[in-house]
Length: 220
Image 1 (cartoon, one colour):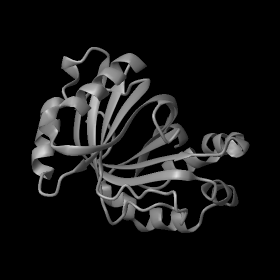
Image 2 (cartoon, rainbow, N blue to C red):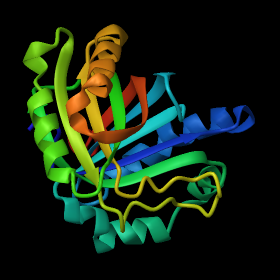
Image 3 (spheres, rainbow, N blue to C red):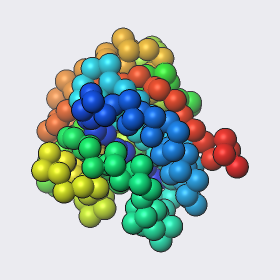
């Protein structure tokens, strides 16, 4: 599979302009490397919105889904650094999804990520998954490198703060589209949303530019 591992943590949030420089410095100098260093984490990618909200998005891949409920990860959550606590308290409109990677087609990662957030109709999960498996064919889309589906675990997908603006993303699913540029990413996102066969609610969508990524091999 082009996405390393079988589990994925998705986080997305806004931050006030007054704290944005410190937020970016924290992510770039501490947080991503700290998370990838946890046993079972494979890589992390960080994005900023070209269009869509929240503004910032990160994806963390794990060897198995179970890593995201492991003692090592829970210990890290319970023992945040002082810098982490300060920035996490400033998150706004947070989405946090703890998910299984259920579909992954294509090879490699793109410079731009298209994303569609689905809410499956009750009892329609199998139908939606089958429709997306059929639709996720990078070979039929110019400029698309790979396409993936991640399905949130409703119990583990909880926000890190009690901020009333936080969103747990509950049982939502996310379609992830790795693209070479914003135009093919946008086209693929619109095509996915407009497909009448999915029979699910689309909560949001966006197109994000890759800021940087780090793999376990970079810090070993």
